[in-house]
Length: 217
Image 1 (cartoon, rainbow, N blue to C red):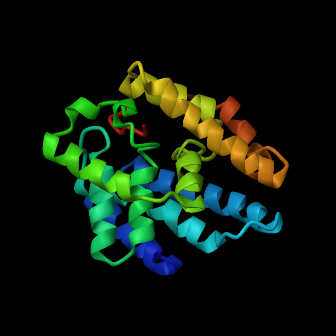
Image 2: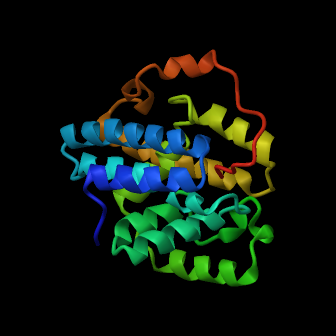
């Protein structure tokens, strides 16, 4: 399975997408990439087989589907998948989907009913054939650890997203997935992931994003 490994190429793709659709999602992507690299480096030190460079580029490109512009719910995940598949990077394409969709139970997705039926079917077929890697898990986790201003606690990100986008009765299932991955990684590195992210404590004192149309989950 092929991932983007060239950082300059990944940065070029992100910069081109940012021109098409400027927004806070761009800096968010950069911060997700940084968080993924920090955690991957500690996983590597703990003897886990992972490439911090792939972790970084996967974080940088996880939201690349936003180049299209605003789309409802998780449609940008499909746009990103198709974009990266067309460039021959199946691994990175999978991350574009898995960072938004934690399981084959698609009803947990907030705004799922806003998505056209043919897109629902396409996403369902894609998620059914994906075998999750450490990069899928790591980027899903880091998507909840970083906003456009820097690193944040998962709890704050969840509340921020809920206040902007609403929730459904299945949302806690999706939230639980973040903490399941967090615990899995922490069991390997034997420390809290929060200890790896510089200045994350600043998120306690900064304002929470309460408005906006960008749905993170």
